Each structure stands twice: as structure tokens, then as C-alpha cells.
Length: 292
Image (tube, rainbow, N blue to C red; front, top):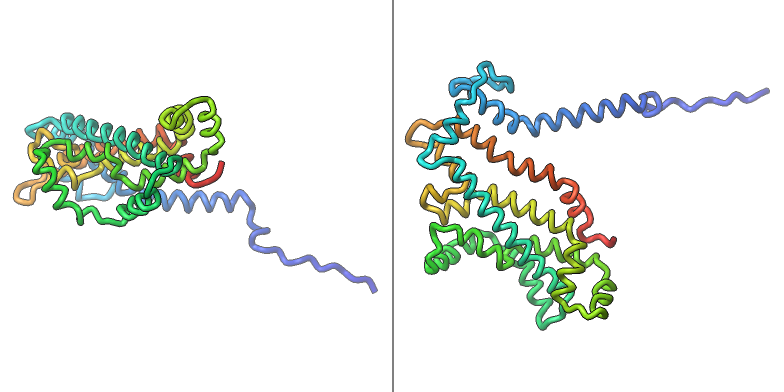
């Protein structure tokens, strides 16, 4: 009597073609992406709608296409919104420069230099990451008030040059630790000092983490509403985020079209920056803390 081999039952994975599974995965990702992007798409679409159409429909296609909201938003205030854009750009660029210079130097000192109390200062630096901003708000405001810096951009810029963002210091420390110390020793044998090693060896190899810190620093400063609200009083010194608030008035009629139009323009610099530095940003985040 001959034995007949019984074929194993086909599983669901075996019966479903690979291309179909991939199609289902892409469809699910597309649906999730659309749900997450819908508020942004609605904002952009509503900026081209008439005022009476903004909240009357959830459609992303305007029934009546108009650009009047952009004209009202750009020139509708006592100060051009372009001037507020310039204020935001100046503050953001200076904040990026300050963070890159001061935080990279602090990270280099913690990873490469030997000094008394290094572990204590490192622990203290990490402790500042757990300190809520609101806990130091009043002392900082009083200090800047005594300096005569209130209603200027100095409180928004000067602290960035003093390495106050512990997150960027820690990020760079993790990256610097992955750079072989043999490179420092070789440069030291060639007569280079700590500063030259930092400028000629460490920084050229740290492009990904510096780009990551620059992008995050720019985004956080550009989107910051709280600090400019505290320190800036004159509309001529408003940043773009403060300018957006002026379109909404609880005691009068709000211009929602202008608000959405200027919000759309405010998002564009961040979008362009992310697209330009996407590769370096991903590389900096992925390689931080990893041995290369």
C-alpha cells in the first residue's frame, strides 16, 4: 500500500499575492496620512475661499476661488505682515547661530576636555532639561527688565549664545562620542590645540548633528509664541506668530480668511527647510549615540 503525501493547507499569506498585500499596505498608509494632513490641507484650501464659505463646508475644493484673504492679511494691519516675517527670520537665524556655536562648544568640552567638576556640571545640565520653563519665567522676566531688554529681541536671542538649550548639548554629546579619539590624538601630535581640533576635526565630521540642531532650533524659534508674547510689546517688533493673533479679536469681528492665509505663508519656510535638509536631519537623528 503506497502512502500518499498530503499537501499542507495553504495559509492566508501564501494565497494572497505579494503585490496585493503591498497595495493594501500603501492604501492604509495613504488613508492615515490623509487623516493627519487634512487639517493642514483644509487650512490651505480655506485660505482661498470667501469668508462666508470657510466654515460652511468641509470640502477641500473652494466653490469660489479668491486670493483676497492674502491681500488683506499682508497689508491689513498697521504694519505689513512682511515686516513681521522679517522679524521672525532675524530672531530664528540668530537663535540657530547661537545654539550651534554655544551648544557645540559645550558638548565638545564635556566629551573631550578634562576639567574639575565635569560630571557635576554634566548632571546639572541634564537637570535643566527637566525644569519647566514656567518655573523660571518670572525671575527671567525681572532680570531682563532690569537689563532694559524688554520690548527688544535680546531676551529671545542672547540666551541662545549662552548654551541654554540642554537638549542640543546632549544631542551633540552623543554624536561626538562616536567620533574616534584617535583623530584627536593624531591632530594633537601634529601640534593642534583643543580649539583647532574642535574646528578642524570635530565640526567637519559633525555635519548631520549640526544640521539636525539647526533645523529643530529654527522650527522651535519660528513657531514660538509664548516668549515673544512676554517680551515684545510694540507691533513693529512682533514676530509672525504674534501677528497671526492680531487677526482674531474676541471683542470684534475676526478676519478668519486673512488668518488662514498668513498661517499658510508662515508654514512655508518650515516646509522648505525640512525638504532641503531632510537627508541630513534623518542621518543626524539616526546616527546620534551610535558607533560609526
